[in-house]
Length: 451
Ligand code: SF4
Image: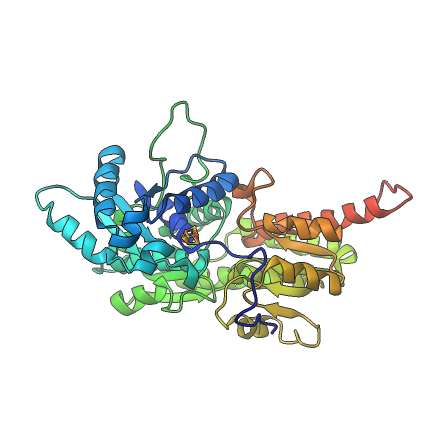
């Protein structure tokens, strides 16, 4: 594995900030508003990224630190912000994520929140869920996982067991989250999907502006998660404290299954076999058929894809799923890179691609786009697969970019990009094959009309 030296500067980071991950999760909780404890710019930056990707109005409140707050602490600003939010939005939950500044000055947010609630004993206060998200210590993924853990720690309850399954999401697109809803109906199983921003971040047209979009995981459902028969949590490299599934297992005895992203045939087969064993239900005909169609497409695409070199970058669990899929196609993921730094990526890639060393695959944590561009050129990559921030590299190298993950802010439809399940893999596969064909066609001086 290639790793940056401690003092190497990052040039065009391949990661986003930690409270952004927290905001994703809070937007997936019903009637919840995220509040960033820090300067105005943090919430503006995050809103700008999310609006560019989701093309929806996104409200994220801020405690609006100024010079005085930075010196004397943000207690008063937090109190004013909570009062204002309760008055303006009437939320059920306020999700409070800290920013670099409030973390650096050491604001004791849990103590502030405790006295806020104490001072308002006679009033009905929304649930206040706090998560610590110093961005100098983590990425948007760390913020995402820490926020799920915090919600589960704060809200989930035990009790008599039900037949419900918990699906704990990763940074999936709204379209991929909707797939879990469809799947639950098809299998005829009760499920709790958390967080669920499939409607709040990808809603229908509104005639009139709504302060709080409809949708999201209900608080009552998060409470019930401690009574479910099992949890399927997506991600092999979760938070260092363990994932939310582990919390539910250790506190309430809900069996937890941590699995990789169901991208490609091997991973999706594993997901469905797990679901079959937990629910004791056979794979519905619909998915058996989708699988058969996908295998047929692998055969059709083989002559275009075999031996092609791909650069994969983005969140570690996403690139891990993509790497497994890319190898199924006979392609070589010459670079597997993530902006996150856990020291675990190489170990999990070794489980998926045991011959990665002989294939000369570079596995890089804490990667930036300078590294991606340089190594992609050295290895003569044919295609980039990742989010929109790779556009400049793709343009410089004159190779196609397949946009997956977050952010996709130079195209429409980032919220509808599918990669999960047989159907999502099929959509991704078609995009990759067509990009390779299109490149070959446009590079050819002949102008072939059939490729
Ligand atoms: S200061 Fe920290 S929390 Fe704020 S936008 Fe920058 S990285 Fe994110």
